[in-house]
Image (cartoon, rainbow, N blue to C red):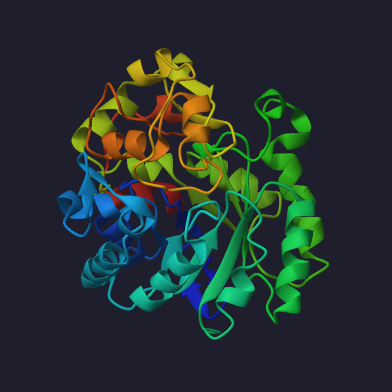
Length: 354
């Protein structure tokens, strides 16, 4: 069973989630796409790529949005991914809350992204941004039918509709779409919101609905697709592959995590987030946090970081570098099920073979 997103055919209905900073760059995304699934390059924090080769630094960090979300690095990541996957479809995940969102979208298009995936807010402006690039498929990430309705209305005015929609449930890694106190409520479960999004999708057309959040096994895939999903997105399972671009230290933290080690934490982005409890998380409290990266709009040059107790760019950058005490290690709720690294090819075979 294949997956069609815009003009692009994905041989297997599996999307690799975009994970930043530096978890899904050229090696992971290129390998996933070469294996017949959809690899996704994360556009977040590309200034850290290749030992910050493409960024101006301040205190060993990419300085300012131009360097944090580096155009030159993103272009190089796509170039190297293409060396692995050739002309196979490649997606780019771009958080709507990042500083310079429009610029990064156009950077990704220029770099060769076939599909733009975007969440962390309502990307009502995306269709207008890519109006001159009709071959580029655009895919929002939503957590409700209402969110899809709002996005579809805005995009329709710009002459487009979503080419697919990703519905993300509350077991996903990283930022969540509902308040912390609502994450465990049944009405926010993936099964419930999937039905809601499918009903809304049917009002707009037949674009595929891709389910994400807590999907781990072939059994999970079969179950969620029996409920109407056209495809699935997995993040944490791909993070735990040899081809994942993260440092070995990042992978060790995830492999060592038990069920009770996974916590919901505040984020400068303004949403609750899920990750492994580390020294950084245990010591969290509001504190003055200087802004070097200017990575996201909601943080407002360090205000959000000071409230949350950490800079998300610094902390994700440290996790990419494998710094276990100061890194922020996002993961899905089922990370405790992972006990070994796998090659991407073997993982895909496990998820697709009868």
